[in-house]
Image 1 (tube, rainbow, N blue to C red):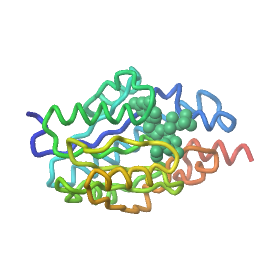
Image 2: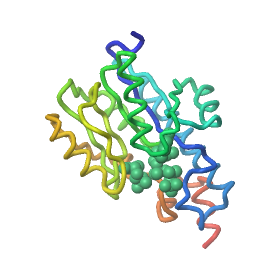
Image 3: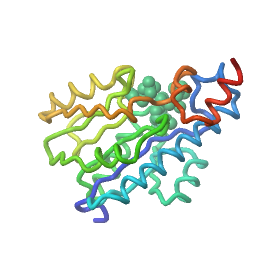
Image 4: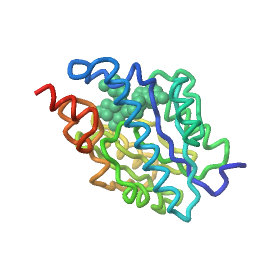
Length: 215
Ligand SMILES: Nc1nc2c(ncn2[C@@H]2O[C@H](COP(=O)(O)OP(=O)(O)OP(=O)(O)O)[C@@H](O)[C@H]2O)c(=O)[nH]1
Ligand SMILES: O=C(O)[C@H](O)COP(=O)(O)O
């Protein structure tokens, strides 16, 4: 099987036209779509840089129902997993986990596509963590969302994305007999949800320029 002895890092990604709705009062529809696509591209590029520097075999994928994202991901060399119209983040990640398990991958690392400024060195540290079959790694967001989750496959618990999902994932991992490892990585604390998060974007970034221009 193509994934034997390897890990799969997957980015769940909506269609940019339907993404970042919490920014709709701060950005136009076009600006939101460009921001969502730009954040996805940046996260994919940093993930590639991290994976290329590792001895451990890590393949990269996106799980999406968006033809736009599918084309961009294929051009970036990512594997494309159809989210089967999951309609919610946990369902899309579950689809990716089943896809990876069928192909023999030993672990799945999930990263959202809206991280503000992920550091490849921190991504590499996460990807290289030796989870074996008995641990799950959780990287908390500043609002206690789950900004990275790495689990053994088959994953013995259900994905529980939503408000304060770090707590839900930690409890679910423990209940399933896994050792939860909370790994607070500074560059993974911020994902772009609200206008206030735009300040965390790199200087000169479209989203930040728009916000500063608007003030
Ligand atoms: N494939 C897939 N990805 C999703 C889904 N829901 C969220 N995502 C992705 O998961 C990551 C985190 O999601 P959110 O923070 O909710 O992003 P968002 O849905 O664009 O933001 P809002 O519209 O403001 O809720 C982003 O990369 C999203 O594109 C889904 O139903 N399917
Ligand atoms: O972290 C999570 O559980 C999901 O990303 C949803 O949280 P968010 O919309 O606050 O990012």
